[in-house]
Image (cartoon, rainbow, N blue to C red; front, side, top):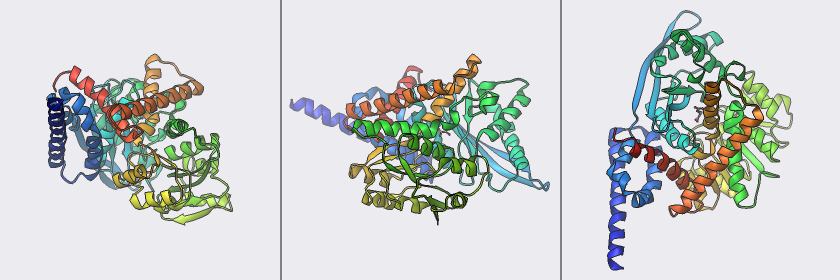
Length: 460
Ligand code: GLU
């Protein structure tokens, strides 16, 4: 008995030392990359019990390998504005891990894009894509280009220049980009057109998020937002609860937020607020998603204009104030680190019961710990927002088969994927000693899939 305890203590300290040493290495290699280190730290904290049960992962250096991208491509993107002046932006593609399939992940056009943000997103994508259970690896790309205030033609010229360089590194069996912040079906259309022009063919499977009329999948646009709500619904069901009759606050008003609002309302909730980078709207009658779509999807207007159509709605400047709106369920669907500890404390004070991350890493580490300490149900992004990339994988399947599924078929498959992700996160959390902790569950379940494949494929 005594000997077994000693072995146990020794193994525990070996696993802890290993995680600690690799984290120090990652820190040294990625100096100043705060978002990437934040994402890595969260995963590392969850993985300690895994190495106790799987010492072979330590022996195979899986943690060292899984935190180092296969490659990071950076390039110059020169483009001409409407007056003929030349501008230069920086383009990125981080091909993080292809153990489970071709690199897969979105492209983001936003002035905040830098190496740390690209790497954190691609790293998160590694676990998220694994959780979907589909044959997709992980990558992310983008540019510090700001689409705000640019003309349609400027966006086209920038996008064509961006993809002209990136086209050398992608392909349906190599790397399949999609949209993200600042990149929707219009930009994907320009990328797809330019790629085909350069390659002299029609490679439907090289991008996802295409217009359903031109090679895209029905249901892709809705998938991330719907998927987040399906996931949170599973989490509520476990407690005998549901969205019905609940008040909800959704930050953002882009693609993810819009369809999270739509699905939450369909399931009987009242969405009280949504936002954009200038501020938030509070509508005591419940946000009308059709007005949001009209303003944002079709017209590119500020959310403030919502008040023109709904007289009782109020606009407040500054987007972080949205977390002061009392609600049962909070769905941060805007961007990384948008919900901090003080916001979490405010939501808790106002009675929040569940939080689901629709954006990538929208809650800071302190905010997550605060929610968990107070017993708030918490759905982490890499599980809760996996619906978008899951339907992207379905788009790849349809493109390969040269057929289209109906929107009902896609939605049914999406529901099943989200249910399965919930079950595997929940099971992993229990199996590894943290029942109910979906952060730990998602990290472990995603990690195990990738790590197994990496061991099977040999050392590289
Ligand atoms: N950008 C989305 C994400 O963060 C979707 C990626 C994709 O469809 O490839 O997961």
